[in-house]
Image 1 (cartoon, rainbow, N blue to C red):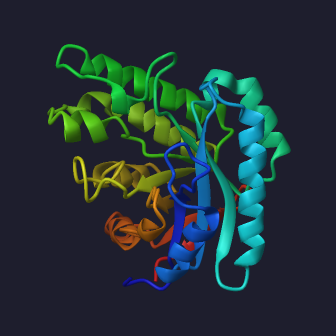
Image 2: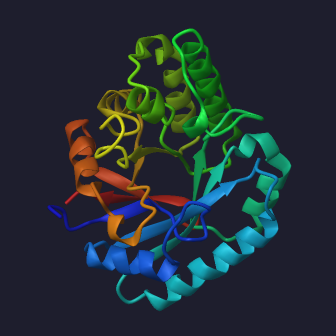
Length: 269
């Protein structure tokens, strides 16, 4: 790593449905990568009614609390969650966020209401623009809800639309609504995530890309969290340094971590 301050604010343990390694191994991976801090942000896709949400959040919180204590001398562990589709079950989401003493809550939209994850959808030129507009409209609603700390992987559907399906999208048509998302994040004193997981796969770009990070800065954005979105212990912190390069290129001299739901700026150095 070219930087000494390395914090990975988006990782998944085997508490996530698609995770592969325990919280202990995820933390060991962070230590091996030279990280100073890590947020374990397992998936809580709260609109998925196929599992016991209460059981999941309790189990995951216990696991993250244990590693927070066990690694306290060599790694700062942030107890986190990636709350997916929270706006579709607001009452339950708000109850959980009130009850659980999280350090950091990522807000994500992996699917539209009553639809599958964007990963599973098939795309065509006739419907993709409408689908993306609906997606950004719901991301705006998520930002306006103002119950999460950082908006995760803003351009998530492009991972599949542009990566898997190789479709070319005129993203300028969404500039008004993405500006509205940024303005809402800024007004609420919250963060935007720079997700670096797609650099080595799919469409080989960050989510969002430099254009959006630069625009967020132009509009007055202050807080950006950077996450690998790692689902394996040996990928924790992967490409975090490239994320910091992008932040510097876009005019940022710091990135953001959250402790007890409060933002803290860490210098890029």
